[in-house]
Image (tube, rainbow over all chains, first blue to last red; front, side, top):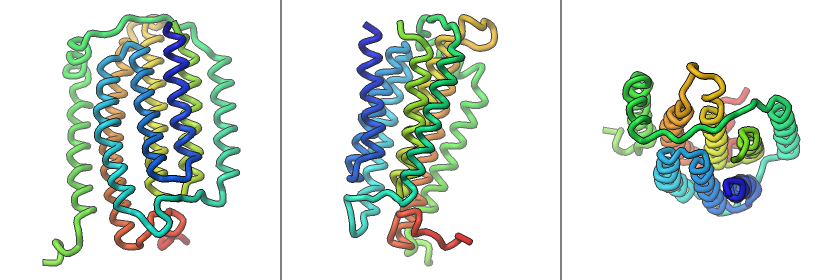
Length: 163
Length: 108
């Protein structure tokens, strides 16, 4: 049963990723990303990480895809919605393929003997997040704040800065 | 149950697709999207490895530590995409293009 789900969601993830890099239409690329990210949420569910699956659907499926679609619509040029690859794409394909072969053979040969573990309760996860990981948590919130202020300042229009 | 190595191979293949996207695309928005794909591959690897390996090396980390690090990765990815898209909008306003090979003002 879990094999069936793994093949289904893993296949959807790879199909989304592959469609993303080969499609000629920029809006389709963003929608392929949505497919891939939703399938990754399914992978998290197979790994019994329910909270992470929720976060994935909410943040990636909800927020990030919308922001990317807005950016695509706001930066359209003469050839919109079509896009072209640069001249080095055969070299890029060779690089990515070689990297994939190296990764997969290395992982296959050094496969560790792993065991399954049960899923954590939400409370356990939250407790750990606010005790053991409290300082990284605070730093992450600071990073978000700084990034938001920086994004506002960078994207502000020139006319409001003139006075 | 599915073995750890299959999750790791899925993650590696997804990462390599992202590498191809970053290297081959011209539009800056699509490069950012490919980076998101690579971050997701890393997240799959983190969650799977932590949940499957925690019992075989007791005391070093807990089986949901991978999930917590993945939450931080998602946070940083959200910050990164906000900032990157702001820079892309500014680039589009100044140069009317988002193709990275046409933005060569600082190229030697």
